[in-house]
Amino acid sequence: MANGNVTPTTAAVFIPEMWRDAILNYAERQFRLRNQVTDFSDMLSQGGDILHIPRVTEESAAQKSAGSAVTYTNNTDVETQLTVDQHWYNAKRVDDIVRVQESADLFNQYTRSMGYSLAKKVESFLAGLIQSATGNDVTLGADNTFTTALIRSGLQKLLDANHDYADGEHYLYASPAAYMSILSLGDFTEANKRGDGENPLADGMIMRAYGLNLLSSSDWDDDGDTGDETASIFNRDSIYYAQQISPRVQSEYDIDYLATSVVTDTLFGGTLAKSANDTSLGIVNFNNPS
Image 1: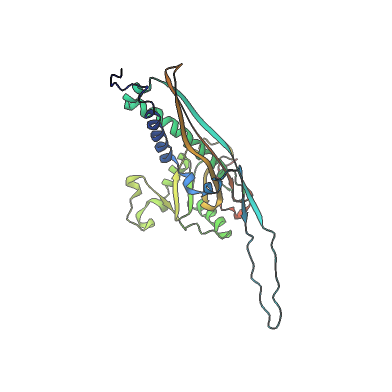
Image 2: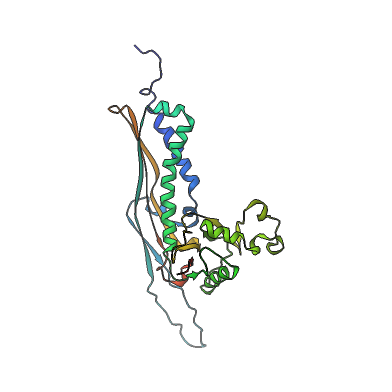
């Protein structure tokens, strides 16, 4: 005879949903780089592990001579292949799930940890792709130390390759130490040089430097090792990304352990839009000196 009590068994279908929402919400809040690159995830909805992305060769106009026929040309276009081969997961078996959920602090710690672990893998993977570019390297004079001349040197490389770095789609990521160095440059903090109403000296927020979106990330090294990339400029079209399995959660109650098994995972891939040494790729890496 039913007694009307709600137990872990009768409420089991609700418990996994609580885990799923909390984990995915936290993961989404941690994505930055993923939202700043070209995303082809929709093209993988029907399956497949390699995405072929054609790149149309730049055309050159020909001058027309009076009375002469036009000349037809054909280009051999190339492609970029994006392989989806990054499968990462986090798994926990949680005893007495109801008791865990009664403690908001403990529940939040579990979900924060699992969600963050997935987001971190995606972000560090994309940071590694950016740092693998070699076509437009700029070597600093001292570890993690910037001057406005060094930044302008990087911007010139972008202009030489016909990239408009002030289009809102270019980003400057810096290691914490490099970011602090940029913070000390008056061109980005002094009101008479910035020419706007913001006060970075008061709130610590530079946000933009020479029209670039400026952010700090620990995925860029500041430990002073020889040749490490301590900052990078890139644009949205420099990196291709695709996610075949968005962060998901699967769970079931294990009667043998009197616990709920929770597994969260994601499957994704990415690539540089062009070869790493191509100066037209649109990536500039600032490296610590030898």
